[in-house]
Image 1 (tube, rainbow, N blue to C red):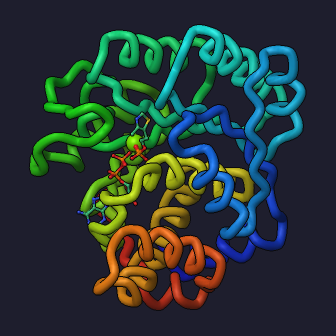
Image 2 (image 1 turned 45 degrees about the vertical axis):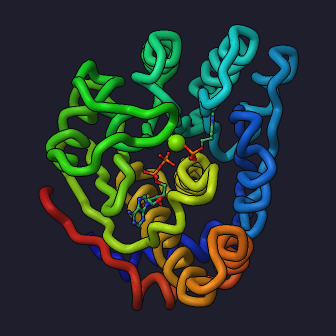
Length: 270
Ligand SMILES: Nc1ncnc2c1ncn2[C@@H]1O[C@H](COP(=O)(O)OP(=O)(O)O)[C@@H](O)[C@H]1O
Ligand SMILES: Cc1ncsc1CCOP(=O)(O)O
Ligand SMILES: [Mg+2]
């Protein structure tokens, strides 16, 4: 994987300013919109079933996030997803809390069967539970660390028929054939709610400008990790609140050159 070439995708996001339609959760809505704006994408949150198809159909990407799901919203997600599929708009799914309740697990699975999804992004526990593997989860956060996350990402990609991003201290991307690890980032990201959800939407922004879901994911992950490292280096003494603001600032100011220089993507297979 040529990280040099992929770093240029960041500039493409900024040049093309893709519209990212998010149907996301109430916790992270504002942070997600601000993160996408800082990066150079254009967020829209639209939940009504009466408009879901119209908005998804004109978007560069559709991001579905089940963080605070309910029946009405899930119906809108399916309407938006079908419209996106008809128009060739890539769909990214964040199965927030899959495994924490049967409703979340089953809803994530039903979205995967109703809609052609390009990329699934979750923490290890969510991805494992989605494919029926037993993996401890606490609410919306991954449980114990450790375990074979490379094997998990690959198995999930093969089972779900999508590219899969398993995030954590090291992020893994796989489509079942190609598997890439992206190192770096900062543990401060686990102290800010919505860091995973925003990552999923950032992957959506890259998917809007990059057809290959693995390449789009790697470019997004490398950008995100480098921005987090730059933000953490300035706010280590302060804490998560200052980090959150600094991180938005770095999503704004990080350059393709920074990502090329500091990004740590490692091709494992393919
Ligand atoms: N221990 C860690 N060190 C550095 N970065 C991390 C760590 N854990 C998670 N991250 C980063 O935090 C972001 C959110 O990932 P994660 O915490 O797995 O998602 P979620 O918030 O959905 O559980 C990702 O960019 C991931 O790379
Ligand atoms: C705390 C919480 N509860 C339901 S959704 C949500 C936000 C989860 O965000 P992330 O998975 O990005 O930490
Ligand atoms: Mg999450």
